[in-house]
Length: 251
Image (cartoon, rainbow, N blue to C red):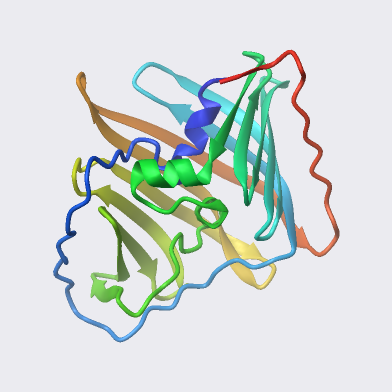
């Protein structure tokens, strides 16, 4: 279940390796507009299921996940392969812990260390937003906005990372996000589709996460395809049981 770690690459930017800081050039924006509106999912608690497919240059693996979220607080997941529980994950405001039952080991990620390493602020809010199709970085007055074809464009910069969000102005939902690290041109791309009502807002029930990064062997592309189902939101309190067996090794 080592590929489960790749799941968190969508927000950890594990392959957007920053070498050194330098100024990020401002990109020209077509058809300037005054503002962009993004409808974001809001709730107390959320739970449901998802089908995820991990692909890299060597293999493909499908997992099924049970997901629970307490907004702005914790994300809890369990994973199974062919009916056998293969792992679990707990994401909170302090850290990310991924447990592999197959390999009998676990991983703990620290936000500060990851942020320093990848020259981009990585925190709980980034992870939650990426899973829900919300903005992964809050809008600021210095952001660039414009229109490109049928999409509103929001262009943001943080250190050497440029974030480009394409927003459908009709439904006010993000359909595509590109994060590019200027020193390496490594890229992470999020694509959202199949928007369906969830409460009073719309949730993207399908998505693709693509990571493009350079190695000595050439350009590598890893992808995660996800499909949500049976998603519900409400104010009823959920439980988030999580423990790590003593015999498991930390990696």
